[in-house]
Image: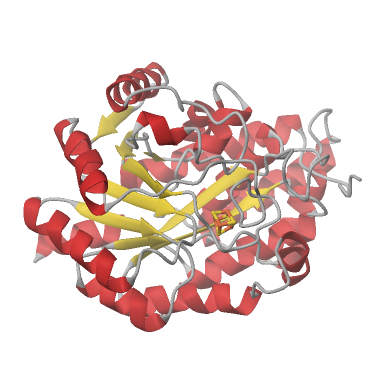
Length: 374
Ligand code: SF4
């Protein structure tokens, strides 16, 4: 069954009057960095082709003062596809029986980072399902080993919901950043997309705990998920303004045929790019990945995201054998490539779209500036 409600118009043209109103709201957002709920909704309900171009140009211009046309590269290690959570859209949730499970041990993770370091990466993103195997002690040892081996790197963890104490221990052991997508800021939609034992409030609490501890924090959401409507997307913009994360990952919902949500339509490129662009205007300094999900949806999805404000890419440095088992969504790109091939491919793509790669640690701009002033 498909629950899709009226969405952003993808074709057609607005009357001059409607276009003028949308463009003046985009100007207001560019200037004030926020709009009222009904103003966001007016944009999403009425935006059409001629207005998206205006929005995309404004979003591209908004990143230039802070990041110019540089794209930070982060080496991504997918450490485990075991997960105890029940996100109904995800191809590795605990109910899925069709994939073999794997997890990488400390030495294997360090080896991936060694390869990444040789390729020039200075940020490593250790991402996985919520796998209880990785105790605090295990991760603390891993973080300390990596940080003592390389004193010029940043480590980002993306391992889901943990307690305040656990996040604190990992931070003290050397983790610098934490990615935890909020997935949707609408309670109704969150509850529709997740198992009943999962908690909308706990997710938010985790994000505020991470901020309080001192991590550079990444939130993020899916676009086009089943039953999502424009009001839900407005909630995401309002929540992100309030949380003010250092990073925001935005990807399309990609329907996976082995999940409970099979048979639904996936999100579209245009809708996702509109949300990337709006987030760039709301949070001009934030780090915005051009996500692999966008590259899976469309051959040039990531490059298009760079043109509407994105400034980060995460080439995969996981062992080639495990990549296709990390199947959060189907047909994920780059699963057969080696880390070296990914590195070359991404650089070529970035340059072809008028951007340049940046292999520095790529902190959030205000942190970068503070460190320079210390
Ligand atoms: S989205 Fe993340 S937390 Fe949810 S089931 Fe998939 S891997 Fe687990």
